Amino acid sequence: MANTNAPWGLRAITDPSGTTPIPHKYTAAGSIALYPGQIVQISTAGDTIEAATTTGIAAKRMIGVMSHYLAAATVVRDVWIYDNPEQEYEAQMDAASVTIGIGLNYVVTSLSAASTTTKQSTAVLDASSGITTTSYTPASVVPVKMKRYSPIVGQNNALAYARVICKLNGNYHVFISD
Image 1 (cartoon, rainbow, N blue to C red):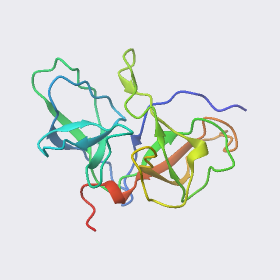
Image 2: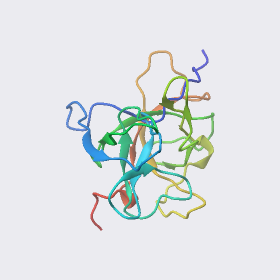
Image 3: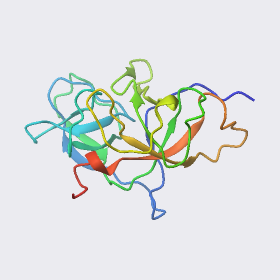
């Protein structure tokens, strides 16, 4: 049976201690829309949250994943972020590949893309990008590590659009010390 292609970005699931994920309050940069499932980072000034981009994730600036939709025109810029560096997320792979594997690091494609209809991130993991190292370059951001396949009845892990459990890599997370 084929897997369903329905990306939602990264969806927070029960954290490693078995408790419900808890988002924390931050302030978003002005006049930008943010979507649930979207990876976000601290602005260069360090005072607001902004969407992460493949060219913009810098060391120790990635903070977590948006929990809700925030319209660009929203006056109150409070946002809730899943910011626990050990938080696990469910995500969709974009295709089938021999490089899909537990413990590998993946590029998130369509990192800042979202559906204006569903108000949801459309980011997916690039199945062909799996590598063992966590060294990054601006052209090849590898912000997530696959931990295991999602326990979905009927999922074929060898086919496109497999669902996986992953976490943000600590190398770029603002709350991981060197």
